[in-house]
Length: 86
Image 1 (cartoon, rainbow, N blue to C red):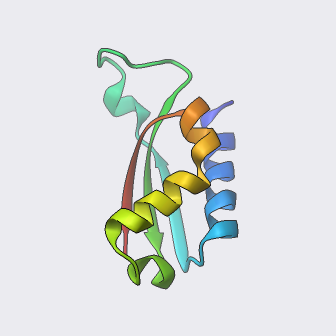
Image 2 (image 1 turned 180 degrees about the vertical axis):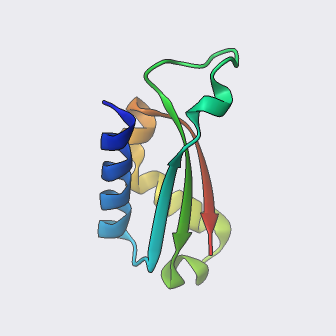
Image 3 (image 1 turned 60 degrees about the horizontal axis):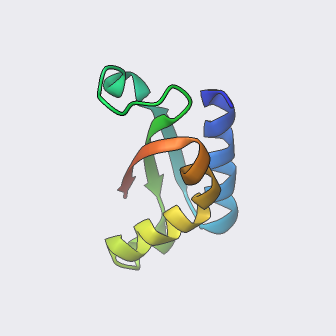
């Protein structure tokens, strides 16, 4: 899977499971290119989410909900994810 496909899937899945006003997904894999343990086919993503639904629950619960929504992608295509909720 390439990064553009992954970003499209991540956006679609989050939008289908969580009420969002805005979502931005960025590829940050280049920041980790020379790190030990970096894997060629696993990506590092930064996700900005504006969501009244997620703001009503704790940050831990919001992150759990996002991780559960992206469980397949986390297992197969995402090495690291940074989540910012506004």
